[in-house]
Length: 171
Image (cartoon, rainbow, N blue to C red; front, side):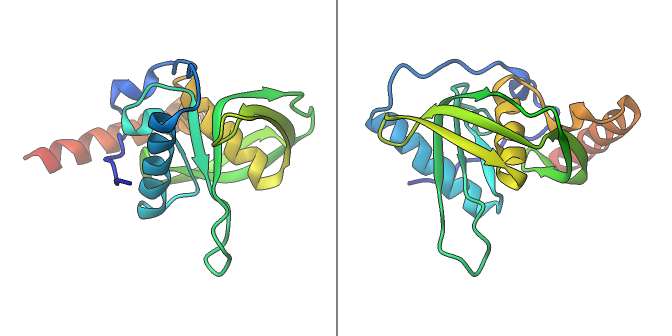
């Protein structure tokens, strides 16, 4: 397993739409393992493959608290089914938008169809933080960042700040 660099906004690669994976094989499991190690190191609770420069429809997450055993989850080719009409608001952050958090409204529940770590088809009922996290990560697969759900003013302010920080870091 390897820790990979996480791409940060406004890198244009984050705007790519990720391609479906052909099959879950050893190479894809290695990518998933690297993603999980990268996510834990960051630290974060979810990571989409595009965030490490791999434009494939793969997500990893682990919502276990610090004092709990790790509970890694792997999703290949995830699809959201039946998002609820009732909404919930969570304060979200993103490893690709470092040190910025804001409230985002999303469906409170949804089902997710996906292939697991072994390539087996699964359907998962989600609600609460799990529903929010899966929707946040799936946005990445479509080239959408959580800041895209905010007002244009807030989004532009965050992107200007990130560009400035990247310019200063490059000097």
